[in-house]
Length: 339
Ligand SMILES: NC(=O)c1ccc[n+]([C@@H]2O[C@H](COP(=O)([O-])OP(=O)(O)OC[C@H]3O[C@@H](n4cnc5c(N)ncnc54)[C@H](O)[C@@H]3O)[C@@H](O)[C@H]2O)c1
Image (tube, rainbow, N blue to C red):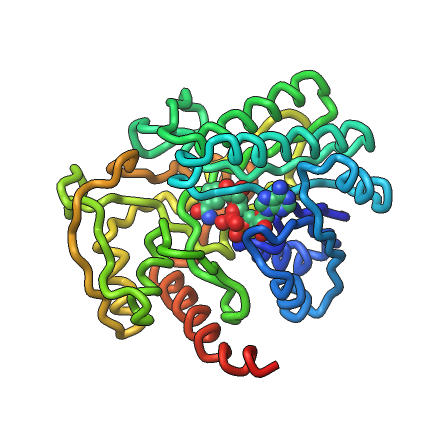
């Protein structure tokens, strides 16, 4: 299939492009590089030794999106493009609503115009709010605590309504849990800007010595050791989940949790990182962060049953691969600067 991957130069998008190409699909990336670099596209091609078509466009731009649909026989869209920083969304709600909602509308309008019937959307476990774990796809969604989460819940509703109005449209809403790690080659991975919001990039920055200590937000939650519990999923497992969702897509709306089904606490992840890589990660416990919930992990039985997909890589592999990417980037930096 010819797949349009919006946000394909970003963290999850780039890994998914690799998995798509390896599965024999063709990839057209549309990305405005607001949170990624063009070199990621080159790295994707290098990893799989295949060509990728790249458009540096904003997917809220209807004209620019139309050009792609006009020029290519698109079979499906995977829509990753969006802003994703929870804290920033509280400060700049309009930016988040405009970018994340308008992009979904523009892309689905183009799908309608060009009769493209497959649409896979990057949603998030955040739409479950503070439900009881494990989160199951059939649960009623609870309000999220930030505009970012609301854009995901709203995009889900928009896509559901479009599918209801057009029975030929097939939509897969993928609710990601906590993607971490990097491609096993160490060539592509997550490059956070500033002080990372997410745990693994924070841990790698501390391990590298860029930050002195990891701040652990609260150790008085009702969890195994008092620290927050999350369902970490290796980004390559997540990428393969997209290929499974796309290839098994049937008419209507389908919602899948993409996680491992296992909760890991902050301190368990820190210990796993230290064990996997032999590096100490100093930390200090500080107060709870507003909006954080105690535990978040998935019931993954639906994806296994309907897509034949399960996450295969364990937490130690996630820690190895995250660190390998970090080291590679660090060591290659002087060479890249000399170019
Ligand atoms: N990383 C996570 O923890 C996580 C968890 C749940 C859901 N998600 C969702 O998955 C998707 C991908 O996340 P990621 O971690 O790879 O983020 P990312 O920032 O690395 O990738 C997003 C990409 O989209 C691009 N982009 C943003 N707005 C655009 C626009 N208007 N037009 C064109 N390109 C645009 C950015 O340049 C970037 O390359 C996002 O929608 C995010 O909300 C991420």
